[in-house]
Image: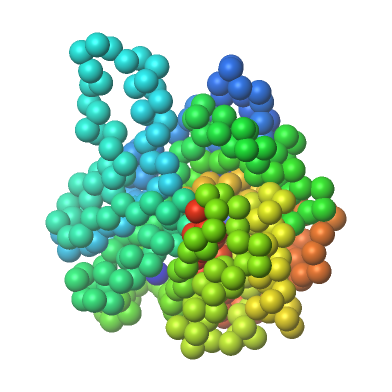
Length: 369
């Protein structure tokens, strides 16, 4: 992984990392739509972000960070999203005219990946995965597969989410999943999730290619675990069987024991069911303990992009040997080694987790080089 492009409610990659380590939150009480009550939201700007523009912004930043310039014709593109351009379709519905919807082809779900490929001048594989909140790690899995099968030797991979739309907010509101004052992962008094915009993409290269051009390497992907619960449309399986299986698959494929992991970036949505299920998983897989934090109290929940944000934080934690804090956690409900404030620590290997609606479970193991 030789380049990172990132945007969150805390800023770009550098600003987000600085604010996160300082324990700051990018959430604020907002009312972007007058028909809906104010809620804590993580916004990138003063108005809802444009999905395609955000995808191109972080892709260009990742290339610059990796020291690459277009055209890159053999660079694969895997840009996923859980909701993609849902906001634009909601706008179409509000302004629908009898003669039809103008430019509707530019609003199809895969256009973030297509526009990124156009920016790169890529004629290689272009994919646009969609797997609820597990989308980001699923996208990384597909990018890794393209490299391992020799179809390409470089790809730009990640996820982008612009979920601040009336339908998304109303849907989570109807479920009773939205927080009222803030996001407090794993806290005894947690209220629910706080929706947020966010994007993180990476330049992935074969080790040989990266070293041949003396590229700065953030770390490498060891392997991944992907499973499904086949249980419920939104609730996790009560005994966490599928989630535990995903983590064990990831560790086994990475040739790691639980004791080899120095840090776990948890999904930690601050909802009652997710945090309880994830805490059970962590206690089961890591009986000897492991440092854990969720960064959603700082950035908010970027849905499909949350996994790639977490991977970026894992890479920076390993680079700087500092554990990012679980912002918003004041009174832990579970007996885990939560990182309450930024903690200096040697980090050689980290694990990032994502769990999505429909029982989508994803884990990715990362290592320094």
